[in-house]
Image (tube, rainbow over all chains, first blue to last red):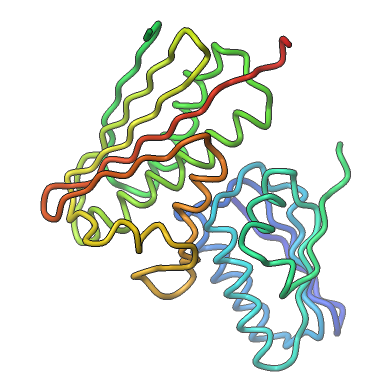
Length: 106
Length: 143
């Protein structure tokens, strides 16, 4: 599991890779939150293109980041979701708090 | 009729979440499931095993007992059991968004298990433990 981030002054881009479960969610969260606190981005993009597995821990990850970002009116986008991850996020109603999109099939 | 069966026991350590779901999925692979069906199984197992770790054995490390049975009508029956604290109100625990833990836990474990399988059974007794049974029919690629 790893997170690569890039900040251009407005948008914080986080590319997650590997498997997201209860075991791996904590280090991802710490890494992303650290960047959010430091950058205070207008918009944050969580890119799931390289995520190979996700369970409901991914929901918590997105909801938690949404809460943190909304403290200073930052918006959240979730991109590159697999069919499975998209299904999990829709089930949780995350499409109501963030823009969520599926990835293109490789 | 059961045509194949597999049992394993793992410690309730979070590092075993990925091991458990991958192993169960590998055993179910003999039914030639689609990628989506394999993902459904992995996701449901991951939720059940995580529940044993974060709820059943909240303050301790215990054993998680996993059994997978394959029936001749292509049904996979997965049983995930812990001897942890047990659930006082199963109905409440199964409600979407209900969680006894705060933080980043979404309270959607049972909802995910329900929607990714055909049937979910939960049995629990305080101080004795919890057994979750997941049933899923594999339609597979060869149809």
